[in-house]
Image (cartoon, rainbow, N blue to C red; front, side, top):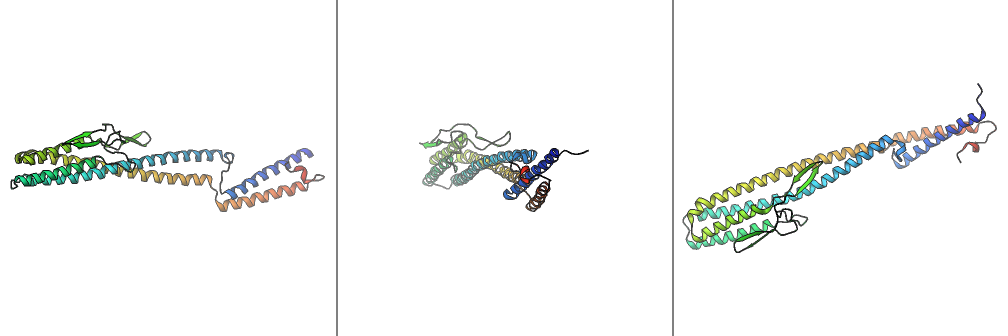
Amino acid sequence: MRISTSYEYQLYQSEIDSSTAAYNNAQQAVATGKAINQISDDPYGAMNALNMTALQSQINQFNNNLGTAKDFMSTNENALTQVTNLMNQAYQVAVQGANGTNNQDALNAMASQITNIQAGLVNVANTQNASGQYVFAGQQTNVQPFNSSNGKLTYSGDSGNISIEVAPGQQMAVNTPGSPLFTNLYNQLETLKSDLSSGSLSKISNTDLANLKTSMSNVSDLNGQYGAQIDAVTTMVNANTQRTTDLTSNISNIENVNVAQAALTLTQTQTVYQAALDTISQANKYNLVDFLPA
């Protein structure tokens, strides 16, 4: 069966169009280093890359949240370490005051030491993190939570917890409202100071030392909880970082070209393109210009 001349040149034109498109795509891939320069190059790959990029962005946001959580909890942990040191000092003063060998002047001097320890405790209770937030004020982080006057400690914060989303659907509490923690410690020190000033050695021995020991244990337990949470946050950050690294690699594998392969493809498509031009240029009675795209 004889093929018509018009159909023959339609075939030539189609070959020119396809080889031109392939050659242009190969040139663009080499120039940009990208395998996907428009969605039509690889719709499935482009969609996968977009999905992975969105997931990577979400993971990065969670890592930012984890960083905020770690800062808050690390500030709490450091503050509670200071509280432990202060209460240890108070405990040593109480032990010294209870031994029965001190005159009242010595006991009064010890009471003055407790006053200084109370002042240090208030300073710690008003600790701020790197963002200027009062970490023991509950949710009222912009309000200085504690003030002391005439042996009484007042609290201006609230009892609210601060929670941060650290994974999809997972919240982590990062604070400890300062009351009753610091109020209880301050009042215990106030009682100890009063017992020292009045020479009530039996109260120091039988009550104050026991109360201080219990409070120190509670603070230590709370500090340990923060340490465990900080370790958990570090583990989560490391896992997220590895995951984003893997996603970056996967996205690169989809979007970026293999340089050697891209160069080879360019050479091959150029050869096909040139062959198509040569074929159509040899067609009888027609000029090559008739078949080139407008």
